[in-house]
Image (cartoon, rainbow, N blue to C red; front, side):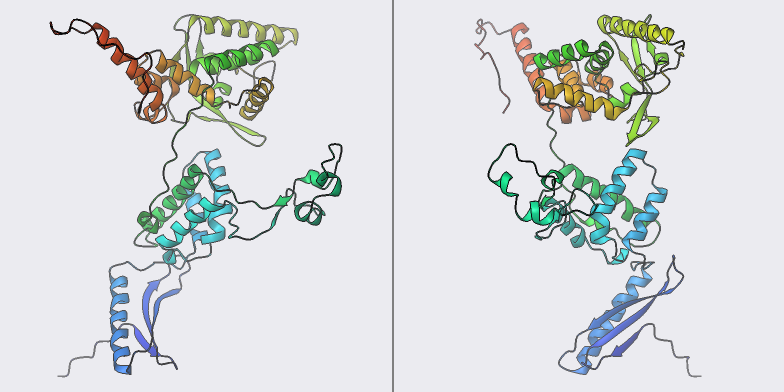
Length: 457
């Protein structure tokens, strides 16, 4: 009996040029339900027989990919993957808004139209390199960056040539087109931290694609992730901090209390804005409990978890306790004058007399920047956390305690990474203190003279 002939998997066709086209069935697309095919073209060799042998090798390789499930299970594009990823990923609302902004500006234009299975590590690393050169993906093009989408006539007047009076240096010259600030594009690289966020988005999306069976291997895992930006704390000096606090207090005691509390506790702006009176124990334990935070995008404000999703108890000193009691008395006096009452769970800092709504975090930032600008101090609101941390470390407080007060996760690893220079300074003082107290051998009676200031290498 003649055995049945086995049906050959895949096919090899021939082109007029003598090249061979290999085609292998790869299953049903999990998203569209359509048939999927792996295709490859083998260029013509010296003889048709050699071309055929090479085509057979390619067919075998494609069949192995299908059998080992290393072929894409769908023809979905990166855009489709990103949309699915955003549907299932659990991230904070503000983090999501940041993700969407970077996806729309950096990921969709370059990779969005590519099939997920066709994206290579080279494609991703070239995207990173492009972002490190120019955040606007100019590719060397010269164009005008407009500050408005409305129709206007700025191109010739400001970008290609400046108006005559302004060009002559007339300080009184005013040009309504120049005021729009449309300028010829100048390349600015995307920051290392932002490039790492793009990497995190791609890593998360392609990781889900592997989990869902869309692809066998994530190309992001084969790339070299962008370098971690080096932390550079920029706390105000004690003199600058005193100047900032005095100016804030003179302008408004309520505003001064907020700045003072941030300096003392090292809390984040959202945590201070979300602090309620019910989470302040000013009479017994003397602690502030940071349970929730306030988030903001544009004009929308909402309450959310703290950044580490953990409650944090921060002990308050006697002076800040007294300052907060005075702040409470002022709030109650205003509420009484307006015929309202302050609920036990109302916000400590609120634009409403009854404390029913929190102060907006962006408003706090803007007011602080205006305060610093008036004083000629180059700083930002987040630097108050740096100030609190550096002062604690300089005072000899151990890193784990500092990390606990700031709400750093990892048992102090984050604190060490960010404030290493200040930890080294404290460690040098500890070495000097130990040297002054330790027992010395009999033949070494006199301590070695040490320089007044030690510098880290």
